[in-house]
Image: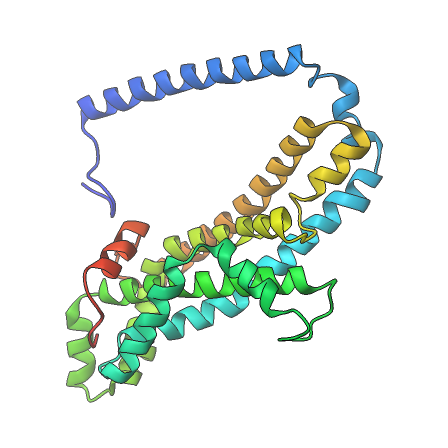
Length: 296
């Protein structure tokens, strides 16, 4: 018996997995003990470093919650724009027409190759008054969204292309046999089935979008969640405690996103629109390096 990703381990493999897991738990415990000991020696475990998050509501109402709201706003807007744009780019790369496939492929490869931080800096410079008149207080927000959309739409385009190409060719042949056109085949047959294969990779990319908003806070002055560390640390002298709390907030938010995606994936698979294939990051890279997309 096997799953989508790997064969079910036998008795020896299970024993090895238990041993490896035990070794990892021990090593992790030692590293955690060392880190806590070091923090204790530096006074980072003292109650006054952590108590503001419980006793002083201003830490949340003035810094953390507004920062989280800005992170969610930028991330959500980038997702809303990047997902449909990425879907169009992925479909364009599968076009039978070279005049469509070529420019779309060049767009995708260009923006996938540039670091997202450079795209944010480009967006920030572009939104100066001499190019696009954007109010100075909102320039960091729109620069972050611009960089996230340009980069992640290109990546999502490759995910969509890989998801469609992962489907059995018989799906396309059957659609052609009943007289469906290429566009109808893509919209009504291939995309609905490819969604379940693409979903794990798409969710991973959405998590990346949410985390990459922190780049704007680091260099562009965007008032997102991680950037609140500077203000809180300056007022309460608790840098380590603040970073730990911020990390926990990121974990909770991203866990909620992935949990929702897992639930949605289960519902989609139960609807029998999937084929059992799963697209991962390696598949997307293979598609990108293995040649352009022809007609699906």
